[in-house]
Length: 241
Image (cartoon, rainbow, N blue to C red; front, side, top):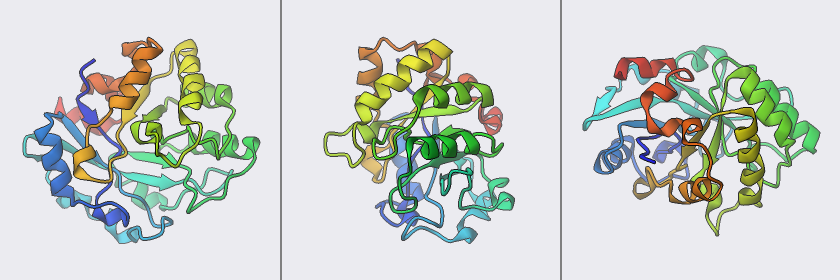
């Protein structure tokens, strides 16, 4: 499977990443990616940017070093009601948004509360991707999650960083096996992401690819292989076709 895009990455502005936007894009070009997406953390993350960072993305060229560029954000999912930490006027300015649960921002709830948070944020028209829904510290009803992703036409992420042996998220592999088998059953598409916090990790999806291959997961349910497959989820992609 040829993987041409990576939409979950972080620059130095996120507070705990180590390269600039242009360094990350140069890395994407070196790896011959067609599309690079920047999804810096939003204000509730300690050390993250304030709201003003997300105001002026229009000044950034959308093709740099031959790589198409999208500017998004990884939102912090704050409560079971699906609330996030960017106001709607700024969400409208993003090319796309990932919504994720993070320990520094949101204490783990019960399975019902965590699941409800995901289900409610899927109702947000400015959120396209559910980020790393794999962390055993946030137990989830995966059948409800996958069914809601199908209903609301959202992408579920397979996060390569979560699968690292030294990763902080627990039971990620086991949880992905459950989720991916349900995605196959419900015909729900996924997106593979690096969650890169350093330029050398851009486009690094090796562990995720290994898991998908092990499960013989259908390639037609992985949007990373073409911009056409991503387009129904992120309309801004149209300008690159």
